[in-house]
Image (cartoon, rainbow, N blue to C red; front, side):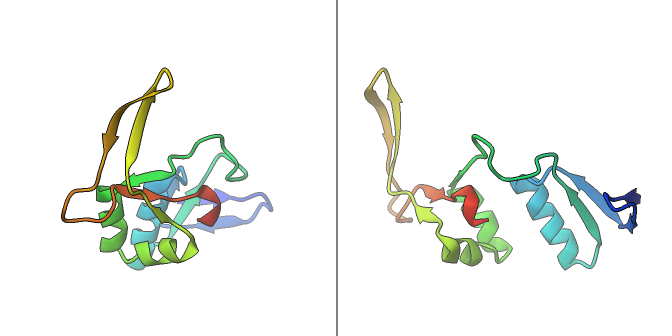
Length: 114
């Protein structure tokens, strides 16, 4: 695939991924590890969106661990969540606690650390 960038240079890659969210970023990383050149394109010129899905449950954390990325994110400031509370009309309607096998229910990954 050929694409002309802002400086009118042609970039040749094997795969173009549109969307630099968690899925696109992980896919780009995994393909690059396999020697497949990628272009990861994001419409937003910055990371200052109002919400970018900053919470990952334990399954998301396991995917990061599987691919050797969790330790990098943890070093930059990811925070384990000791519980999750759901609120409605100013009252807690549900609280999720970790199971006996894990010490937390997910991780908070502030967008500015990535």
